[in-house]
Image (cartoon, one colour):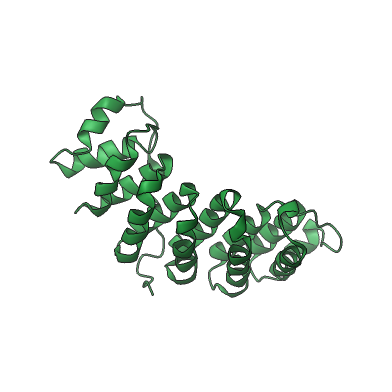
Length: 234
């Protein structure tokens, strides 16, 4: 199990300021520069740029000695997904010591739309540090439309985490993820399981989890028996 020694992992890209888009040709060449700063800048550029040539060129950077290069490469692979990258993202998550990088990997796996990514995302949701767990919940929701056959496994994991995770932000992201599943795609037994978990979320000790559970229930078409917003705040 990963230790919680990096509790608040804001992404290095959260403060990324918009600038004129760089030249893709220059950035592609710079991915193999000898200086880590240049490799990082090139990988970061592809967090904004989309180019069908870049996916496989980013894969070696997942094992770069510099963690800032690794995290930038992970986010760039989320922006430029390629099936070839999925096994390397999974392998790197298993061995990666840096929470920032694991967070980026989880984000990229969500955008991969690959069934291969689901066991890793579930493991991340169950065992990683909070900042990675909450993104794993979102990544599972991102991936589901392309892999509807995985609904039972994903729904059960999200419901269990909503009920058990000690961190309110993780529970909130589980409610959000459950609320993103179209009700018509849920078999009756899964629909009832989701509704029951979200109704329990209405009793959560955290106001944010209660609010998100209420919104998710509305998204699923549930209105009967819901508290009013004023009642929810009490």
